[in-house]
Image 1: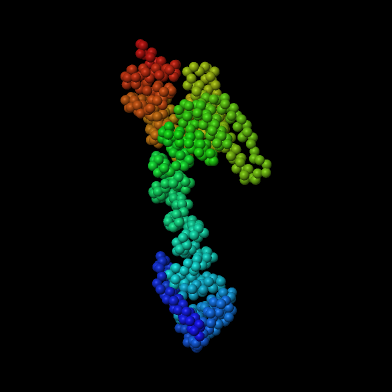
Image 2 (image 1 turned 90 degrees about the vertical axis):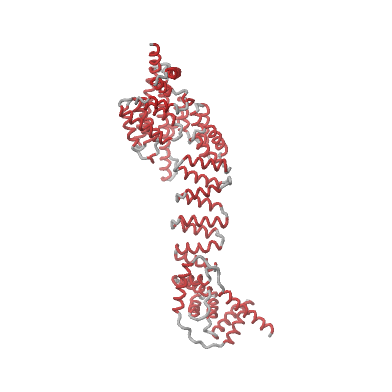
Length: 639
């Protein structure tokens, strides 16, 4: 008897402890609105329950049967335990607790329909209402296919547990997946995720739901909470990317400012923020990158590459060359970046008249891109005057691409895409051919010693270029880039009305067309100024040049645009203003530019600066011994 009495006391204590725990206040959740809704359902549930009928009770039998059932359950005699639990309930049929115990055991045997009947009956009884009782009803209604009832009891159960029953909360989320209630599912995952430390599978499901529902702000909040919980830097990167998509650049930059490690995540964050800043202000993007690179010491080959390109644009050429070379050497596994770095180095070399280096870098760019930079390489040969080599390369390439066909066996969609790519390549090579013709023609036109046959060849070269471009426009009349080259070439050929009509058409194109509007404005504006057909033409030309300057900032072309502006002021008789503008130009960059010396000599002469004009015209004669303006100046001086 002592052993049985001890067991009875232990079980009684457990029951009391269970009741005490179930009635203790739980941690308050953030789901107050949901709790209010659940409370309303609780009232409805209570109101739907009639007063419990008075059942005959045999408490002694009920207690004895219950205790024996528990004892047998602990020993593994489940069937006997189930039978005794049923006997206990039959002896005390008004006991809510026993009713749900029986229902639970029937459910575990797999007889869900009978279990639901017992659970519904038990739910009408008075007594302490436990979260696990509501959970049982919810699960049984799910199996019964009664979605509304299942939802009701899930919420009652969660409310009873103050949303601290993670198993029930997770089961509710599975139910919501079944019924496809995405809005409620998002709310439940918000409650569940912090409790499971943002478990990856649940986190990704919540992320996918928010993306599907276009809840970008909620995505940022989710990523921020997930990163705070487990410091997963991939979440930090995603958060920055979404902030950028939302145009919340200041917030994205604030995160980037905290990044100090030179790894792939930091690199992607910085590149993303830098690119977003550059959309509004390229100089600000450059300053941001400089701070991260030099002050915060966040350095990767790709960031070095970007820094080199920004320095090139800002004309900080010495530093640009160092960083672009470094990037090209370190980015061997990323040929696109390597090719771009060498392209920029080739351009710098050309601007410095370093023809040997320009060709070397252009060849390296083509090698890195596995032949993808052939048009640029041919153009470089043309820039440095190696015309025969450029034409030979383009002749070979045109022969290949003009007859190219997709390999046998390629599906039709892929074949069509390949043909489009081949057509683009063919167009690029023809365009390069035309431009190199104009380079060669320009060299001959600048040559004071050019013979008549050479001049005739220059004219023919420009006509051939025109034919190339006309054929390109026949294939694609929307190609405005080709029209730019045509307009410039027509002007050089003396076909001014045709040229200017093209320029007017180009100026009407939208900013999004990709055209280099400052270059177009300066070329057209300078042509109007230099022809000097009327005061109105000069005014129009000067206005266009000023617009080009306003759009250019500190770009390399700025000095050429300043020269155009000064010449426009000279044409208007504003000699002092013209000279002041010429003084803004760095003479070191103009030592081989005959047009610059022609202009400054004329302006100095107009201002009565004879000594300065004499020096300028002497420099001009060294570049072009037969220049008519210089010869006229010295002829007048002798008289």
